[in-house]
Length: 119
Image 1 (cartoon, helix red, strand yellow):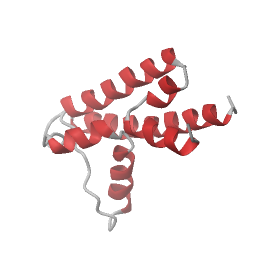
Image 2: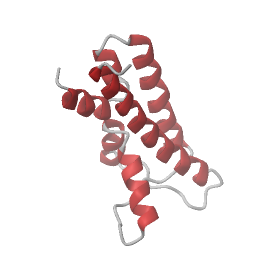
Image 3: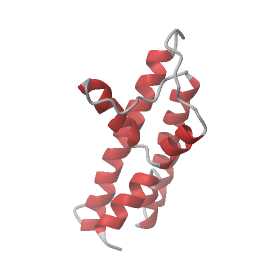
Image 4: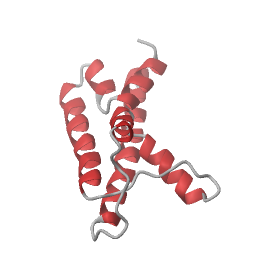
């Protein structure tokens, strides 16, 4: 499978790149942990950012959250992640959503490195 395909699949489904390459334990851990982090972020009433690049931090946070792939698109399609700014847990949830996406981006890079034989 071409490295580009591993990158796209790994981005869309967290841990899938490792699963496809025979690293089942890592793949399952990444799948469960990252999707759980994203779900916890939504449960804590965290918000998914709009793509407003007039404010660079909001735009970068939106890109970071997009790093989750399909779970992000499912949450948007279901109307989740509107966020409740007045909730005491909002900042924690918001942080979970951003970190889950950024961690998935690191997992994608790791799967790419495995595919190229660097690991």
